[in-house]
Image (cartoon, rainbow, N blue to C red; front, side, top):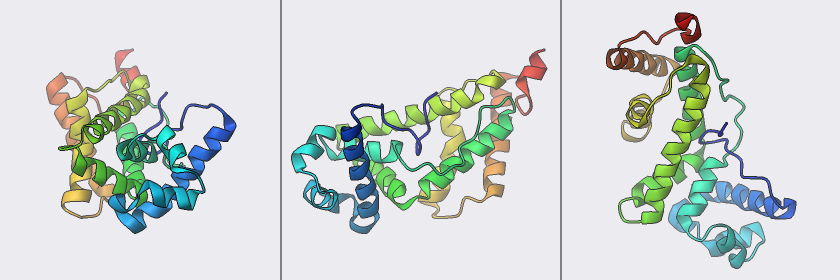
Length: 206
């Protein structure tokens, strides 16, 4: 199963190369909230990570690629949900995990930077699409025991209110807010699909 936005790990490879990647990404996460995306130059990153700029370009040919990996190979926060047959529980736990991941300063800054650059930078636009695909794939893997698989629109209807709350309203995403979002999302899915989704799908089919 693919890991979610803030926990996907890179493909195993040469241990020395992997250690270099991990060190650079760790340094980038420390620097990004301090200097911002434009201030995170390859010269600064190479200096602090003790690597050459050529090494950085081999791993990340552009800034969007670096931010993409910084997001998707983020720290393990230890709260990612398990697959389950109860759609409500999976959706609530997944949104809670997403909220906590985006609350990490470096990940939050990187997401905002890629979003802001997407209109004029094709690399950022592609990275933004791939991040969305990664999240939906991870959520569908969690939902497999329920028999439910969601499409792009249904995925957006779930996470959209949380991102709007964080980035547009500049408000707090409380547990109560997440519960309300999931309740409304389930109601919408039930109307669209014509079947009850708030419960254990496996028991309903048997």
